[in-house]
Length: 291
Image 1 (cartoon, rainbow, N blue to C red):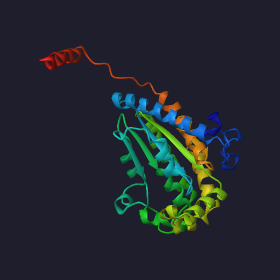
Image 2: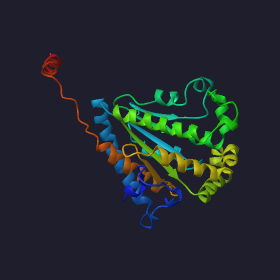
Image 3: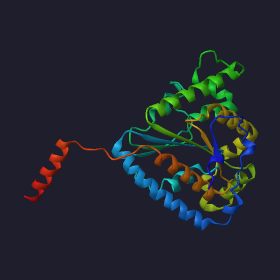
Image 4: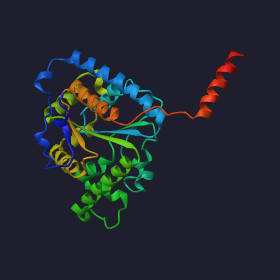
C-alpha cells in the first residue's frame, strides 16, 4: 500500500477535493484480506507498545477528525482493539464545559496529553475550535474572548492566530517526545447520507442517530472549506496530516493501522538497561525465592 499519497506536510496547496474518499480499485471486494492485514498490524503495534511503556521516554498521540459518520468511533474500536488498556487512553472532546470555556481553548487539550510511555487517542480534538467554531462563530461568544463581543467582531486574524497556536502546541509536544499522528477520515456526502439512513432504518443502529447531525449536514460545504483551511495551515513536515479515504471503513482502518505502525516502529524504542546494582538485586531475588 502506498501511504505517502495520503500525507500532506504543508508543502504546496492543499485541495481537499483532490483527495479520494473511496479506496483504490485493487482493494475492492477484498474485505477478508484487509481484515487479516489489520489483525497483523494490531499484533505488531501491541508488541511495540510494550517497548513504549517500558522506556517511558516517548509517547503517542493519535488524533481522529472527520465529518459526522466518518467512522471515528469504529476506527478506534477496531484499530486499538489489541492494545493493552493499561497505558492507553481515549479522550472524546465534546461541547466544552463551563470550566473548559473559562480557560483558553487549548487548556483541555494540553491536560489530556499522554505521559511518557502512554498511547492516547483523541476522538475530535483542538481542531474543533477551528472547525465547528468557524462554521458557527456565535459559539465564540461563550469564550469571553477580548474584543469579541459579537459575531461581527470575528475576523480572519483570529483563525490565523489559532492555527499558529495549534502548530506551536504540536511542535512543543513533538519536542517533548510525543509522536503526533493526525488523521482526517475523508468521506463523501453521498456516503454520509447512506450511513445516516442506516442509522434510521436499522433498529440496532437507531441509538446512533442524532437530529443534530442532520442539521450540521446542511453546512457540508462550510465544513469542507473549514477542513481545507485547517489542514493547509496546520500541516508541517514534523506533524503532517493524513487524509484517509473513508467511504469504505475497512480500507480506512487498514490505511490508518499501517501508518500508525510505520511511524511508531520508527521511534528509537528499547527496553531500559538496568544497572549493576539492579542486576545484583535480581540475583539476590532468585536466591531468596529458592529458600
